[in-house]
Amino acid sequence: MTSVLGATAAMPELPEVETVRVGLVHLLGANAVIARVQLTRADLRLPIPPRLPARLRGQPIRAVRRRAKYLLFETPAATLLCHLGMTGTWRLAPPGDERAHDHCYLHLGDGRRLAFRDPRRFGLLDLIEPGAEARHPALAGLGPEPLDHDAFSAAYLAARCAGRRTAIKPLIMDQGVVVGVGNIYAAEALHRAGIRPSRRVGTLSRPRLAGLVEAIRVVLAEAILAGGSTISDFRQAGGASGYFQSAFRVYDRAGQPCLACGTTLRGRVLGGRSTVWCPRCQS
Image 1 (cartoon, rainbow, N blue to C red):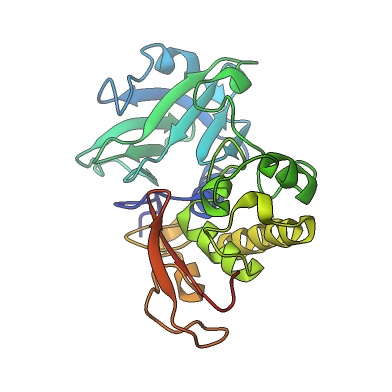
Image 2 (cartoon, rainbow, N blue to C red; image 1 turned 120 degrees about the vertical axis):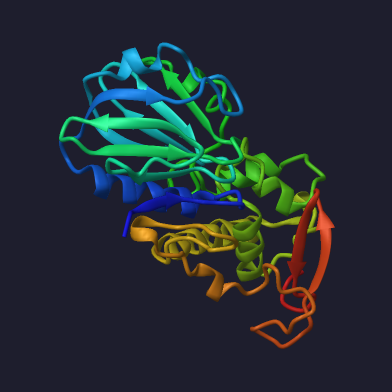
């Protein structure tokens, strides 16, 4: 089976992108070299830099990292930045495996070929020069990683809540506050922390914020271990689906009983996103 890593028809969140990153590290191995880059179109949702193939030609891939929902292929000369959009996937594409909407091929030094396919073209391929990562428009202004215990703490979240009247769910989904906590994992973390999504941030005590920080970490860690959530056609390494959706307590379960107390879960739109919560467990 051809290894396909990515998501189709659903925007991947942090656990899905981390799963893709881990799969790419496994596929590439320790000594991968980009022999050449072949672009089949000049743009996705933004233009692909014309200098990208020349800058990456002959470069060893030192690491594949993740920042928020972006993948970073680090080489000595420059870093290839990738966002999967809604339908972006990476796969090993042997000779003869050319598909519609393959927009970029990384030809590796060992003869293998890595293909980026994105039918809806909401993804992104860009080039970051050495030392310019923090200033890149896609990365500048991002909040801390939620799994970074030093940067994302109860004290940090309390400081970001101070003086604000917004609801807690839109706040933790704000990429400038903390990255990678999308709709699914925000809903699940708030249920575990016992906090109603519409609760005003200024009314939450430090202990309750500490519980939320821990719930966010636990939910994301469990989702990464499960290989992400398959809402549409997300695939991890080897083509397998993620299975964290089997552990959903509230997401997409409005009208169903709360798994903790049996109360009927409620749903509404909050901050432009569907939101589900338990009126008994969450206050």
